[in-house]
Amino acid sequence: QVHLQESGPGLVNPSQTLSLTCTVSGRSITDSFYAWSWIRQPPGKGLEWMGVIAFDGSAYYSPSLKSRTSISRDTSKNQFSLHLSSVTPEDTAVYYCASGLDAGRNVYEYDYWGQGTQVTVSS
Image 1 (cartoon, helix red, strand yellow):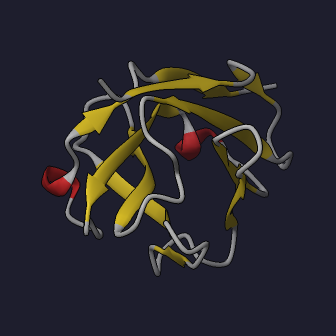
Image 2 (cartoon, rainbow, N blue to C red):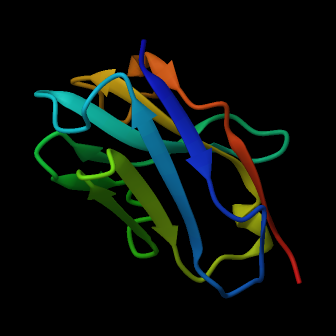
């Protein structure tokens, strides 16, 4: 059974960097062809794919967020992390990490999801 768990601060000040970590168990983040993504859902809106880091460490980002987003990983801890810079209140959302085989920017390609973590951007 694959389990993903998000962790990080629930409140971030505007203009700061939001950093979240996803801890994975039940599968290695280096297992061939698996993809590991960050997805968010702002209040009252749909799911938004933010970016992915693949099994080989390559990362791809949503064009609308690319200039502010970075995804990294720590294979020794089986974790991957999201860094979103220069946040504004519009970045307030529930943030999810998710995993899928050969998954891309389509959120419905992801089989396993974390429970989600609420992040609020406010001073």
